[in-house]
Length: 231
Image 1 (cartoon, one colour):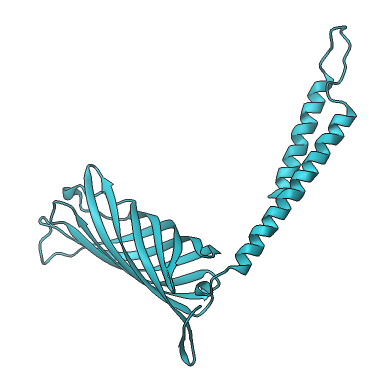
Image 2 (tube, helix red, strand yellow; image 1 turned 180 degrees about the vertical axis):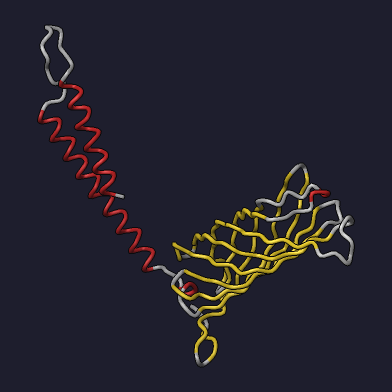
């Protein structure tokens, strides 16, 4: 990134210099508006900017490394749950979600989830189970994450007979942030966008994105001698 910024700055400066060579002064003679000294100053400023950017990046990486929580290290187990809300076509739906996950690599977790949705003011509801994966690129007291899930669900409504199974498959993509609030307990907020292969059109259920809040409890590292509490 820093090399790209330096290169871009130099190219902009040199391009302006070339264009300026073709500008004529009041006497009709071509005279450069940017002289060699100015070009050298531009290069020096670009180098200084690059050095400052390198220092800031190193400082950020050092902070992340020094303050990284042990929660996100391999063999850590966690459970979580929360509430979600979404709206579409003038209708609001609420959801409950739960999950259990395990960290296989630093910052990378995978596990199982269960979701229950209900359309407000309607008997329509749905439930689904699935598998999810998350990656936490920043792993300090305030962390961020991106995730994906593959789910299988079933819908229930007045227009679906009790002996008929109205099933669907969904893919969820989410992005969010989590903050450490208590020992081994984190609170998170996220936005998940879901894509379905089937929906119940008679209830105008255009399942889509939802805003979610929840908590995660981290048990610690799971080893041969049981669970070792994370600090």
